[in-house]
Image (cartoon, rainbow, N blue to C red; front, side):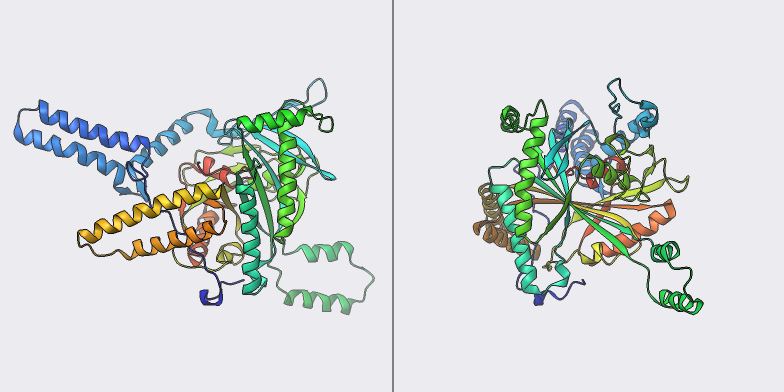
Length: 512
């Protein structure tokens, strides 16, 4: 599963980060542009109103420089402007009772009709409504995110094992998955976002010994038991279990509402209210599953309410087995206690936890994707070659039609050519990073011309440990593994309660 040399592949991939090409402020948001303009206005008014020349010059130059320093000057891997909003939000959260969440599932009871009383989710998730829809012989849970105005559903998949194949088969598998993305992006469906979740948990090293003690024959000869114990001691028991999930997301639009209402009128669906949205999502998932079969990705099972609640519960408490769905409901999906007051990690605890100590979670976002050509399985060091670290890798793909992506690519290429022409007229030295970026734009243009879909990527990694010391050790291990995968990480300090949500099956973490 290790990444072989790039030369063994017929096709390499250049991801990289997009070069800013905004008209105003070079991809700066409105607040940053307003701050620069406001500081320039203060400097101008200072120069007009102050009569003393030295003081006038200090204000005339100092205010604009202060604005540029706040917006552009690096500070703790970000800027002063970014940290100001993060610190303000974090301090306001720590002063409010929202930072310390306690589930009321045990005290909620049931309603008069026998149904469970809804229990609100922890901070950072927002309001959620749970629905179900028939999906083949099973059912799938459909979540309505009222604050984000999206509809999501998840299925468990089994990957094709890319690292176990040769380069030709790997390229064919990637082409098939690209066909799936192209179909979803350019089709007439309502799904515009996909999320891949890779959940890695260490397996119990004593599971085989426990099974032998429980099911072994006590009447067997003593020499046979001793021989089996020696054989078991010689075999490595360090293993992991890998679970993969695919999340489909639909933005709530007027067209989707009309389609849900039309589905609700059909005699077969008999949907009422928001259940029409669940029927539309089930139809979209059926189409996606058919494409997954063509891409040699097997669908294991859809996640109903019990399975989805068990998955969410195991995200907060890795001691909980994902397949233990007995007595799991949407009310028991959330942890019993959650503490978001720590700046460097998030603490969560469930009632059935093995110890009284809470679990510590830290989330990092992939700040920079590979800037050099990489093979298909460049994420193998992060996904496979990091033993004994409980982690979740989430990649959210926001899809856009090919025509829209081509227009954006042409705009970016035009800006690059104009900047190169301007640099040539001024006799500037050619920056090799600009040449590499131009090569990435050209390759993306060739892919889009062949029918590929436009994909905007964002990735998050959550690490879970029992103690802050173990969490710091695992964070260093993940940082080293991400370096082998040509990734750069940035830990979301002071906002882990919000960043942790991006590794849940909600298809969040990217703006459109």
